[in-house]
Amino acid sequence: MKKSVRIGLTLGDLNGIGPEVALKALRQLGAVRGVQFVLIGSPNAVAPLRTRPGHALLWDPTPHLKPRWTPGRITAAAGRAAAAWIYFGVRGCQTGMLDALVTAPICKAGWERAGIHFPGHTEFLAHLTGARRVEMLLFGGPLRVVLATRHLPLAQVPAVLRKTNLVATIAMAAAGLRWMGLRRQRLAVCGLNPHAGDGGLLGDEEEQIIVPAIRAARRPGLALAGPVPADTVFHQALQGHYDAVIAMYHDQGLGPLKMLAFDSGVNLTLGLPLVRTSPDHGTAFDLAGQDRANPASMVAALEWAIRLARRPNPWR
Image 1 (cartoon, one colour):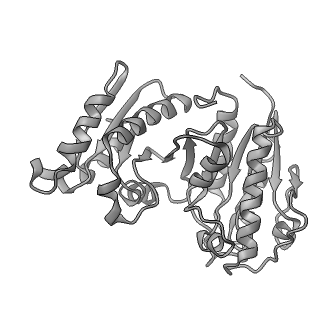
Image 2 (cartoon, rainbow, N blue to C red):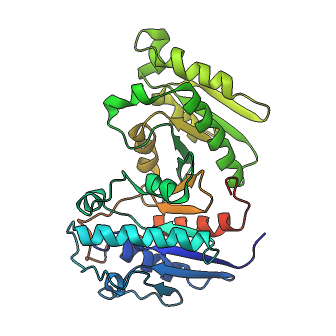
């Protein structure tokens, strides 16, 4: 196990709460033995804040950008800077300068204005690392959720669901649980439709896609249940029956998770050749510049980045 690690922390969209929660989280964690924190971003992102980096280093890989701090505003300059900081964070991991990357929230509208056409961090990180397949494992409190589809309009989800993709998602979820240190991998696979299709009365995706995928994914040591109706599976997970839930679409999984762990959720990207975690919240422009943001989710993301950086990465 690696004893000394360096954790990179991108500041995200500087007009949101990313810089604030980053600095608050570092202050709350204090000095951690064997850990060096490196903030990746512009001094303009931290200068207006009352909380200072303290024991952390500040690395500005793009001094020519100099984005202005305009809290609560969506700007192309902030989006461009946020993407550049992620790029250099990834490069830092690839060259061995960093052992893990934690990312503060970005604004997708700001990326669009800057001409950066990725739906989010996950897809951008996959592009930068050349990862063939990535998954989102989100967890907080008693729940762990993996998404079979991510940032899609709901109307497109049935057409995108495929047996082969779902089999791969299940396998990656199991590997992610092992990486997190869980001795068992008990996975519940959600149905797509109400009542998990009700025997075909409410849709046939369960019988045509989900059931065959579960059969194909079964192997020794992996306990699979499903398709389980989404209106009961999370209650069962809370009762300890499952170690994680495979949700068919974004809000099916994140609605229950955020209800229980809105301020402490963590997003872990599976499939990357590096460690990447993030808080499970957005830029919260309505709170930006007010010193009111809760850093609990960022604290948890940093703590998990430290743990995972000291363990073998299944995708490296």
